[in-house]
Length: 295
Image 1 (spheres, rainbow, N blue to C red):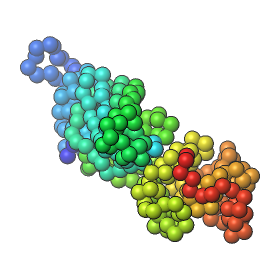
Image 2: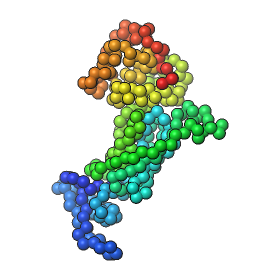
Image 3: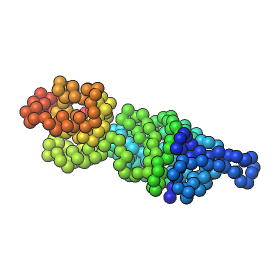
Image 4: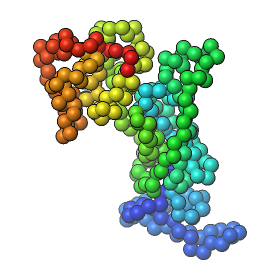
């Protein structure tokens, strides 16, 4: 079993030195715990505290690492590095992907991190794979990221450090013990759903791979403009974009729902599901052709 240790507020583990000196063979450290924690876990966490050096900063020992990519870019590599130079990494993450692509095992500490990442547009990457221009279409970026001391989730699974890269390229870190079910913007699931249920209506798309090249770009548009991230809302948004009209959001009724500041998750999806056929016909007749690839 793998565990990480974080030092923070109420309910979290704290390790403190009570008599250590430089050069001592043994550093005596004490630990306090919240009532109800199992005795067997105390020893493990105390040992991890000793490994962390008893210096009071958050430490993650033997942690796994997953990158969730909500951008429209295929990522070649992602590296998370702490202030001490320790790093964790992942790579080959398609647009919208990352779930289940876990890398293990790493040791990281502190609250200040740097993310170095590279990637590009999938279409251009394939086009220039062998013509000597591949590097010209690859971006390389770096971002500073802070992750305050955070409570380690309870459970039996390995501790996973999640890096979520959003469509606007801001990033967030989180801890979990779940390999699946942590996706915040369901891009890949929406691609599968749309192709499985509406492939005959996808004009100009020969296969699911072509859809996967475009839908993440539309997802970025929907998230940036309307914060579309709920699964039901995402399916409705993509159904209208790819099968009815690419500019469906210019319709006054659709725009009013999308821009409603009090809109709840799933509300747009339910509104679209209740639209009469006459409304869909009107949107299609007055709008631009569906599935525009020039997003």
